[in-house]
Length: 246
Image (tube, rainbow, N blue to C red; front, side, top):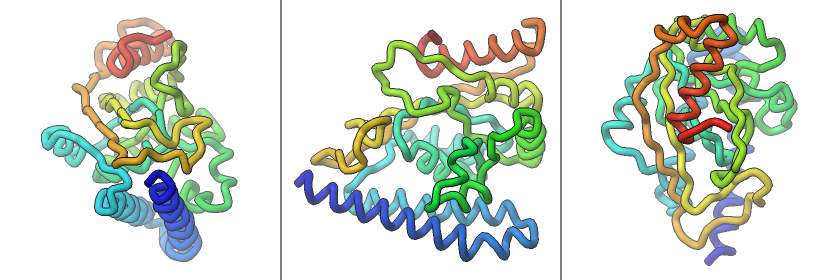
């Protein structure tokens, strides 16, 4: 059974890679010529919703989220959405649930042969901190959600040390928009850092999402300097997602 599920998972990865090449290499260029960034994001979001839907139908994996939390994500506009990062496809699952979203990608992600075109067309590339702050603020002002993983990379749920980056807090404070924390659990854990892609469970994998209350940023300027404000907001995010920040 595990072998069959690994083959099924491999098929999904091939489809994901080929789909990325098709969207990024064929459909994105004409949209980029006319500056239709929103249409580019909508195209990716639709493909990721199809990916998640097909996974549910085949029993590979499913996403569990309460109707109330699903509605909250569906109505989310211009928010910094922060989440813990445990699997390779956390961004796929979150973006599929949001009405319009982008994210921040490492510069190295733009060099991947399969999805570099998707990254460059869909996400903000983190190659200049000042430019990122300006670009992210403009996107949020336009009602686009920004998905950020404060851990910066995939981290095991059992990690004893979990330092968080302050980028999400700095962007939220700069744009003066609320932060929306989302907790993600994967049972059993797959696609974790250092885990082979074919190491899949013998039964349907479940991603469970919980949406927390928004964290308004209006109170944090009282913390003092911009650095102190970002640190205080990041600490609040950490307590919400993990109970503490270490």
